[in-house]
Image: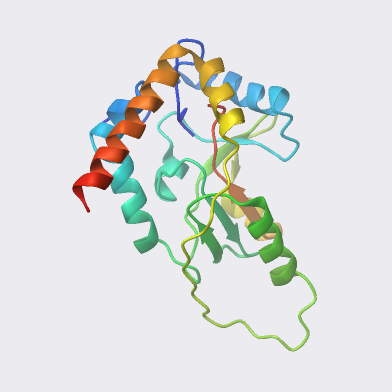
Length: 67
Length: 141
C-alpha cells in the first residue's frame, strides 16, 4: 500500500490503491447519514471544525489538490 | 488533500508548510475564489470522506449528507443546491437515491499543461498509469 502522500502516481495506481478507493466509494457514507466531522485550516484563518460550519448553514465541500 | 500528480517541481507534501504553500498556489495561480480549507498532513478529513481526488459533497445545516459525487461537476452541484435550498413550497424530504454513469468532460489540454508544470515525471507517470488502466480493461473483458 502506498503512503498517503505518495510520491509516484503510477505506483499508487499499480499497487491498486486507486482502484480500491474508487470501488469502495459507492458503498460508504450515504445521503441521509451524518457527515464525518473533522478539523481543517482555512488559508489565513484559525482552525475550524466542519461541524462549526454546518451548525451555521449548509456546506458544499469539494476535495482537490493543486496537481 | 495530498497532491494527486506530484513531479519534480511540485513534490508530495513533506510537511504542513509544503501543504499550505501549495494550497496558496492553488488559490493564487488558478484563481480559486471560494474558501480553501487545508486538511492535516495525513489527510484525516480526506480519509473520512473516502480519499478520492475530486469528490463533491453537500451537507445540510446540522451535518446530514444530502449529495455525494465521485467527481465534481460544478453544473450538477449548482443545480442540486439551487433546487434543494431554493424555494420548495410543500416539499418534504424523502430518501431519493440515484446512481448514474455520468459523462465527464475533461479539458485534456489544460490537464496536460498541469502535468508539465508539475514536472516531467508527472507526465511519464500518468502515461504509465494510463497503460495500466488499459491493460486492466483488456484483462477484464
